[in-house]
Amino acid sequence: MVQALGVDLSDLVSKRKTSLEVLSGKSIAVDAYNAMYQFLAIIRGVSGEPLMDRQGRITSHLSGLLYRTTNLAERGVRLVYVFDGVPPALKEAELKRRMKVKDEALAKYEEARKRGAMEEARKYAQMTARLKDLMVDDAERLLGLMGVPWVQAPSEGEAQAAYLAAKGDVWAAASQDYDSLLFGAPRLIRNLAITGKRKLPRKEVYVEVEPEIVELPQALSELNLTQKQLVDLGILIGTDFNPKGLKGVGPKTALRLIKEHGTLEVLVQAHKEGEFPEDLTTIREIFLHPNVSDNYVLEWKKPDIEGVIRFLCGERDFSETRVRNALEKMMAGLESGKGKKTLESFFGQG
Image (cartoon, rainbow, N blue to C red):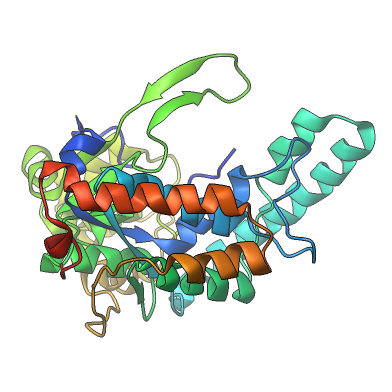
């Protein structure tokens, strides 16, 4: 159970199926914090405990980074990880809400473990993940050793990832939510991290999950909206900076209201009884003119295999055989380039 975050546009925008074969040879920006939270939530033992080394340091995030990155690189997909900086002040309420959810889940996890209800315990454990500074430092160290570029965002990682895509420095941004579109990413890739057969929650049913592409120009054209109106629509539904949105308003109603009134300011005047956020302009500016940086270099390098081994196996108790196999598959994938790139061009910029 991984908590869904961000604005939900799933009922409004067109998505087309794609494949890792189609994405081979392309570079994709990923919000590092979102990825690591996912690893911390999912990569756990039978009773919900995270992976740890002999000193009790959590390693689930390192395992996820290693195997996801190498698996995709084996298929010719280059990842760029973007790390969050200082969040906007308006996100404070949402961050506090998430922390409260984690605290409540932790209490339920401990109670379920005492009862011996391991499946229930594991469900709650997935909601307790906390990302600490040491984990971020370790992640950046591992990516450096693997030759995978990472970018430090001044604020929201998803905004910086969208900026990389908008500049053409990467082909797309990857995320499960749709905030990247509000931040102006021309292409959004969904399901990149969960491709393959997946078990439905609490059911013995498996479904095939395939990557999807959402094209921002197509979405705006089909919805007949401007980028500013798309952001206003998101604010109506609810974002990380105004989580509640407008009471009783879902995506389809929000679309109708924006088309009827044009802007949120006009809508506010027409519906004075609604509880609209006070900081409409500030929220809109976070999306339309986000705090991003040009201070980065995207260069994929050959992995320092022995350096990775010393770190993961020597310091964090990973299996040397498994780590070497993953890195060798990564190198094989990069060398073949799936017929689209040579190794020299693959390790170039952009």
